[in-house]
Image 1: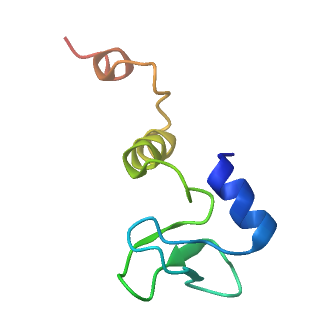
Image 2 (image 1 turned 135 degrees about the vertical axis):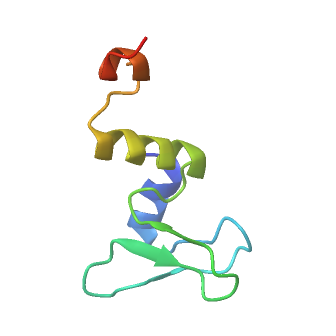
Length: 79
């Protein structure tokens, strides 16, 4: 858990990394994603405060079931 997420969880405030306005939960019931109503930036709640490219890569590897350290060719046995 990164420091920005810890602070947001503590305060309940999620400043938008793009424009600085406070973000809101896209769905108040689930609270699993945030959206900035000013600029439209959005992210998952657990990914808040992380580099978006790192979050996306982690998500892709988790969905595919491929650990980050494995090479595509090794996983799919291609030469």
